[in-house]
Image 1 (tube, rainbow, N blue to C red):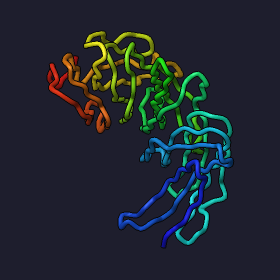
Image 2: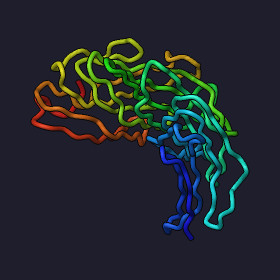
Image 3: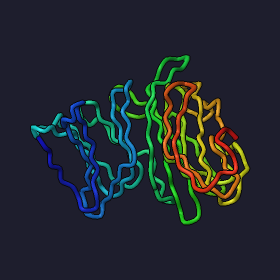
Image 4: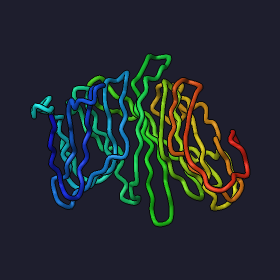
Length: 277
């Protein structure tokens, strides 16, 4: 049986779950309450240890998220949430489609929010385990690009608390296209130009001006503290082009503490081979 959902002409977002036979189980949505309200969804993730499905994107105005509706047109629970303002949101659902929380994690009027990318993992620390959520956010102005990575702890009720945040910067282009994690290892991939700095600390400074380069940055969280200094290791680029070709990392996944896979595209003939810089 099908489910029909309504929304606003300015755009609405939805989250659906199917069984392994392609049968629809439920549909949830986020809808602006006013015609000038907007909402997008640029990434989602299923947490196998947390038990939550999370979606993230940008919103402006007043937006309401509702719990899921089944093909029998019954709501899985009565939970809903309305947020107002403008920024990046994270909407958290359990596997049954019941909305647990919606939280705004960034609202910066100076920058225009472009996209956000989300991942979940169960991190291991000397003090115990935590279900961690990591979000990489792209922002832009007419003169600059900005990338920020946020780390949160999600509790059993589906609410987030901040762990740390750090910027990734470049004197040229800085765009993140994906983020992945496994236990304490987090990796981001995207496109950068010439130099890259993590939390204001330079990683490398080489490459031709104006040439886009695909790289993967990985870090290892070693302490359950609320500071970016919990990052103990940061590896350098995956593919570093010194010629006239351009490249971009578009997808990344971490499937063990030491194994990272990425995908991307390039044009022309790279001046260097795949490898670390």
